[in-house]
Image (cartoon, rainbow, N blue to C red; front, side, top):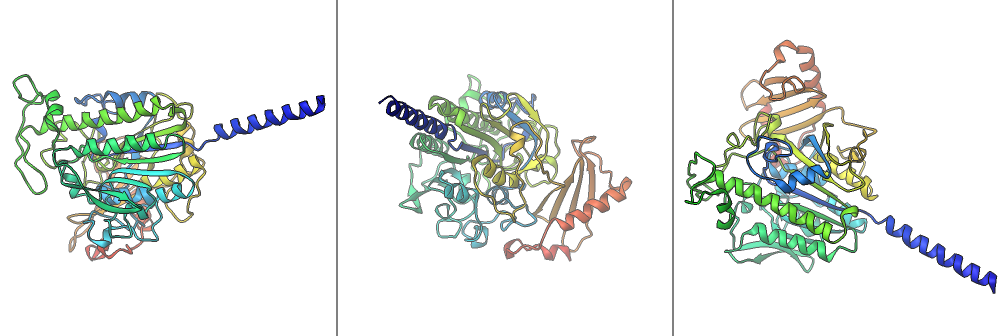
Length: 472
């Protein structure tokens, strides 16, 4: 009997051990929050000069690591998000610029595998709430075809300019469909509420939450109660002088654009705080990586004033530029016990590295033909075994722009159809503001980087982004 008892006890202990071992090996949750056109200098943790309060983002940075040389996929939203989702640079991506979602060429194809698809296939519940921008409901790039179990928000970036609208889109019955909404509701609130529901519903299993919020992109519009926080008792703006913005294109009029922009950034901060608080309340913080960044640099549309708010921080340029202000974005990563606390890291990496990095964090396979590299070691405060030799971008609005960084060197190429090219060279270590073009004094470096720039790209498969005519 004693031997039977001992064997039973041993079996019970082994069973308990395997249960505990299984619990400790739970795959981590990942929450990836993407702001829309938030500048590097709009968060106090990255720029003490920012006059807008961002207490929740500042706390997130203090509880994790901030990366000060992290790059967006591009300088506008759709191609940047394509790089994030597929792991390709602008030298190889299918979507290399903005275009209407109704234009089938702006949508991801059936063969374009996304980060969400890979995590979904690895047992993750996947949800996206906010702005997609990579395919409408009838395209091969619709959210339900690209790895998301749940989606609620905008499909098209133009539609996402409207914070009060009569419709959004949602995955219902396994399909992405249009759903009517109350035109008096601020869509940011609706989107964040859906994200909160998703976390609550999936708290007991590994989940990937992609939260591409639409603020603080133009138009500059917030509910009155949020605007009042940045107004004086008499209703005037606390951020003087104000120059009223008159309705133009997609953007509605705004009497106090400075106050409205500040309110939108502060609203973004509040919503991030709500997500972090929920993760803590549910006891998920030790199992959850929280990433926060922006899709590109600060914008100057709809009355936005990036100079007034020092939105680009120490950098030159804004959205649509390939200077650092257009592509260098803030990144905060928080994961207690996994990511160093209160650290700042200047190692360069980019959107296309997110897919393989998440692969390492979650035990998810990574395709071998992408441009991205696994930078998961960086999240532990270590140097990755392999890093990029260089980083490359291209963008075409009013002529072709290309940029390449290698170490501290940066080459920018400008080319308009029928005109000679122009090359600019900067040393980012000595000239972070890219004020002094030193191409004339460094012909050998220009030649080396120019050769890499040619090596970094292939002609676009997508005729919508075929810019070969500009090269003539």
